Amino acid sequence: MNNPPNQTQLGSPEAKALFNFNKPRITDDDCEILSSAFLNDDDLLLALRNLFFGFELSNSEWALLNRIKNPKMLAILDKMFYPTLQKDVPIGQNIDLWMTNDIQQAKTPEDFKTAWESKEILLEMIGKSLQRLKKDEKGGKGVDLIPKKNLEFMIARNAYIGYVSNVIRDIVMNAHRKKETVAEVMERLKKDSVR
Image 1 (cartoon, rainbow, N blue to C red):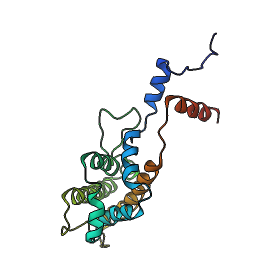
Image 2 (image 1 turned 90 degrees about the vertical axis):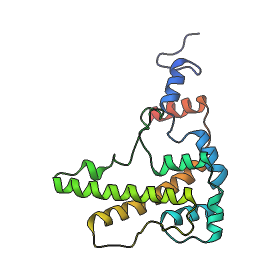
Image 3 (image 1 turned 60 degrees about the vertical axis):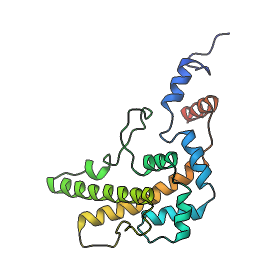
């Protein structure tokens, strides 16, 4: 039986290539790990958010965070909070935190300098919070989010607060994400192409 033109068959090299091309940066395995820790655990999500916001944490919050201190989980959190360009990331999924509109829209050297310096502060904040999580620095200082009369700091601070909130939402969404088979991906892509 002949297949209709432009109809990709499951199991064909084209279907596999399409499936691999559409793989998300956060894999199904990553989602299973996220799900095992974060699914329906608002207290853990809140403790993680509080750590990133630089709050002093209680012993019970540190105890919650200790549950996610394993190499696989920390690697996923690094990937989500501090993405970097990597050669093994699926096509179209490579991102880093320098790929932002503030850098691209800088029209003057002064604009670029402000955008660059605020981005450096933002990256430092993220790095400091990840280190605080990994090192279990109970007495360690978290990020300082107290407003200051400094343009670069305020840009970084405000971007950081929104960014952390978005990553926490992404953790929740990925913890709830269902694993898709090749057939399900093909069906979803077929429906998407009709729209």
